Amino acid sequence: MVRQRCQVRYDGPAARALAGETMRVEAASKNNPADLINIALEKLVEAGPEFPRFSTLEAMASTVRGQVNEEILAGIRGRMTGEERGRLLGLADVIGLDGKTLFNALKQNPGRATWSHFKRLKGHVEWVDGLGDPGKWLEGVASAKVADFAGEAEAQDAGTLKDYTEDRRVALIACLAAKARMRARDDLATMFCKRMAAKAKKAREELAEIHRQQPSGWAGESRRRSCCWPRG
Image 1: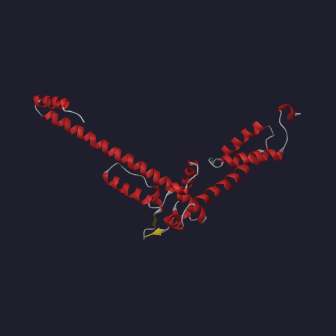
Image 2: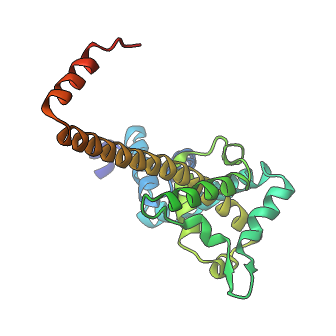
Image 3: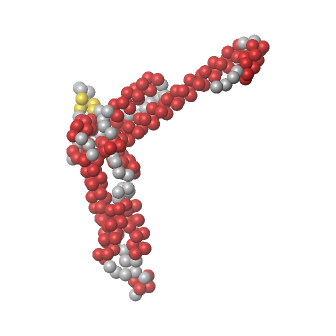
């Protein structure tokens, strides 16, 4: 009577199949299980079957997300050459006697907008570019997924990252390298603009000081000539 009143039908297998299919499609671009469950519920409302139990949907979302993520990470690995994989995996290796690794270099901040930092950041961009072509590795992968995988890698250090399987580790580092490349280029452009703005401000102040120190007649003649000077 309740089903008749609510105009729903009991069809457990069909409801689970629809929910699973919907989650699999959405998991290609979404990583939060709650998002997958909510979208599946919307499809179930449209189709009319009685909802599966929430625990069923929760377990389904976790399973589907894990499967889709592994497929995406496998695709990323498959688009790399053996040399590129070795280069990325080597970032987590300790170099020198201080126990440092190059993995942390992917997380570096640009620092203040000084010329020394600008030169360092330029070198950092060249180093990140030398790791490989993230555009090729991440072809067809949703940007939200790349951001999630990069965030997972960034939350680790070189030691905990080695707890992952080698296949998963190299794909996560690839996503972090893509994020580092984009961030470094943005930081480089921002820092350049800040330095140029500071130079322009200083030049305007120096010009104003020169005008202030000159006789009023010279300043007026200077302004008149600048207004009449042909452009082009």
